[in-house]
Amino acid sequence: MKYVVFLAALSAGLQGAVITVHSGGITLNSYDTTTAGTAADPYLISEDMKSAGILELSRAPLGSFNTTGSGHSYGKWFAKTVLNASLDVWTSFEIEVRTDPGLPSSNFDGLSFAQGGGLVFSSNRFGTITRIEDVRDYLNFSNGTVAPGESVTFHFAVTDGAVRTFYMLQTPNKVDVPEPGTAGLLAGAIGLAVLLRRRK
Image (tube, rainbow, N blue to C red):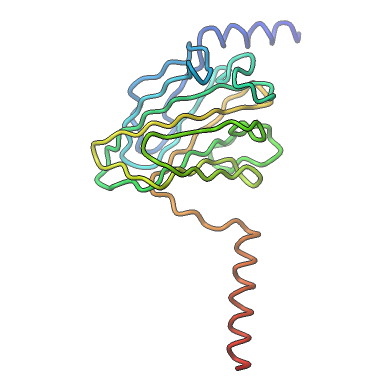
């Protein structure tokens, strides 16, 4: 049985993963998942984006082995080019991976942006990358702009511990809500400041 599953995964990897639009304001122009999936020869995605949306990556989306060198079971490099088809200037862009399109990815599900692999990601339009991997898995690109009609490219890797479908959320100009721990610390600090002010 394991041999049959391995052959199915290998066959899917040779044919290439399938990428479709799950929801939102994304138009998928083209993609190529028959490449090597390495940093030099990554999976390619080209899309137009009017608003936030979700891509679905299926049929052994990360192939049958890991080409990133991160040590995870499965993984591939991606080069994603996104045209700003909205009317807004993008000052940041967030990419998040999930096993369920409606729920954040946990730290224990195996899916990540090569967590702990020491890989360096980049963008041709944004100079700063913030990554969160313990509460959910996202990359937030900032310190740059993408005007309407302009394109931005992102170079990053996705890894997983299983052969399964996953989802890629994309949100321009994302304003993050602090995580529960951060929100608690912030509320405590504000409360302390108010208390000290009242004592004065």
